Image (cartoon, rainbow, N blue to C red; front, side, top):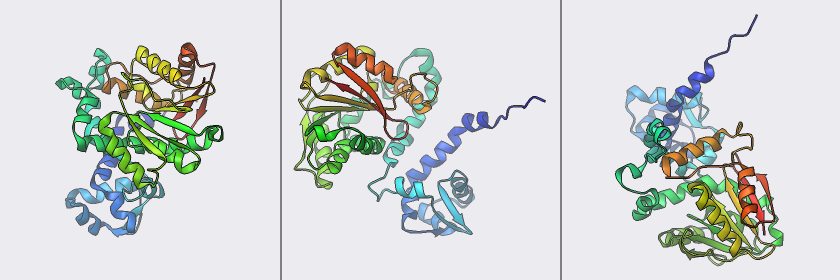
Length: 336
């Protein structure tokens, strides 16, 4: 007898927005931060979060079933992953990216079908704006965005610190450094390293505040500029994290060529993204991130390691390789 396929995967993915929005609302409400100090009865937690009685029990127990909370009797506590990554009071907090997803991306993804048919962004651009112009014009939204980028890149930064041969280098610059999440991880792991970040002038105070909070102001310096218009600062190692996927192919190659020009012989460029596997079958996150670039940018897209290696060699890098990092992210290292 032939085995009849289960429809479970279809239901889980087709109605996946139920699970997603439940988690995003929990982050928005600060649920995991409330529970960071210890277990709490359901009624006390409901009152603390300001939830209606009708919804509270199902909401909390849904998070138990999804694995984000644990429950003994009527006492709720954070699951280990939630406690480590979704408590705002911990330096490992990743929720900034989910705060941004809740505030912006969730609504914009409702227009994915239109984006697939038109090839046009579905974010602020539909109202005559441009993503980065809108974000960078509002200091509050800019800081939230940069904090989200720290959450997105922190674990990859730790992996880059561990996997790249930093003992051969002394100076690096992160291009499009945002709040400085990756430079901070590199400097914390390698006391001999000095470096900094290169980004638009508005980012400077936010970068410097974060770096100072980590006790690294004497080793990490902010460089103001526009990486699409200005020469890149010179360093032994340049990094581009979740930057290259924002741009179309011609712009990608232009940025890679500018990095090549700024590096000395023996220098290296590290591109880290949710690199798509070469067969384009396994890294669903990377492929979905590329759809997110469709939603967010006029021409951006994510790419495979083979794609990036080919572009690097085209602009002059003599060798390039791919190294897995954390989660769906990998780095492509180009050697000059």
